[in-house]
Length: 457
Image 1 (cartoon, rainbow, N blue to C red):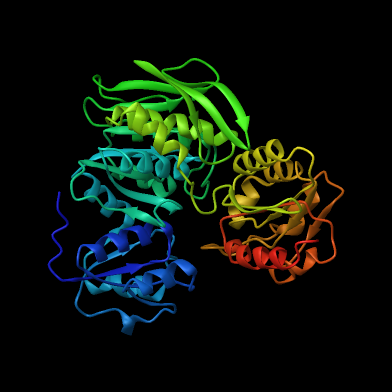
Image 2: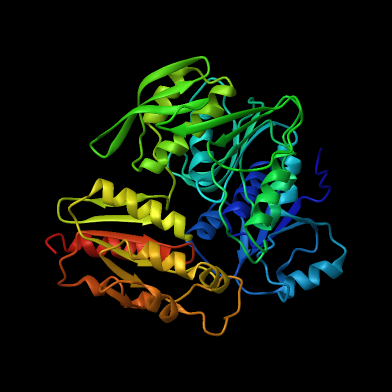
């Protein structure tokens, strides 16, 4: 299905989002003029501007090009946004990001990675394994791949497209994959889904979109009613227990996991995963499964997995020295925080873990307050930033002091972004983890610079 955009200008409302920016890069590469709006300037929007896009950062109807042929917008844009209100009345063609991605992917054999956690790393891993093989792929990713330096890959020859299948706003229901992966299903986005049953219902509908003779790769143990076509295959994956695809003989050497990959027609011995974290072994098994179904050879898989560098802000080890370790992670759900801290504890079992967490959304903080308190209490020291509101207005009684009060912890502190990294001056600090999906990423470089300049601290 073609978008058939007659005019040569595409306008992005919310261009700085990770999914939106991948689409913007795609259309720029295809020769379109790309303009856009976002609320704040970031490193990502600066990169987009350097690539040739025209972006502004205040609501300004007069800056929307009159010749715009298509407006692509994100559902995260508030209904009160002046540009959104204007465009809806203007008669210009408007499409949600998910609709556009669905139309583009319909021209390919799509590998869609879904799950409330793990989908960004898994989709990035699939795309890298494919790109390093004779098969190749296009890819629209939900994070910046460290191997590619981008969230977009374009191939002129491959019939495959890898996409991150986002459950927010039920966006993934616009995809019709040949191969689908489901990594996890937990309560999240309860501003969209009323409860866990509603989340399961959406994922069940997603399985109904898998094309005839397609395949579903699903984590073993996930209880999900399936709506598959009768000729679709269901394949399960696991770590350290038998399944259609599973890892066995795990060992940890120099903080990297070695394992054997077992699949229906064989076994690949002594794979090395190029990034740390036991939960990433699980992601790797899913990615290897999809890649081997797509025709990547065992030799190509072995080489690709060892050289995979991960995704920016996914257990991203920024410093790893004798006196200080600094890890940055996108974790913004209790289960993601638990996985991140557990992996850091496994890697550095005898060191003090200090976590800096920025809650994301008032509604998520309210809905998962007890879970956040429990997960964060796994740290040796907790530094809690104010809630990042994103698209939301404050909710009475929901704030960081409330969350802090729920933590069963003796070493917990409220802190402002501006007081970090000076907080660490003169303190004995061993392992720092920044976690969150808001603008906590703006602390990464200052923290790195501080500890690089104070290596004896």
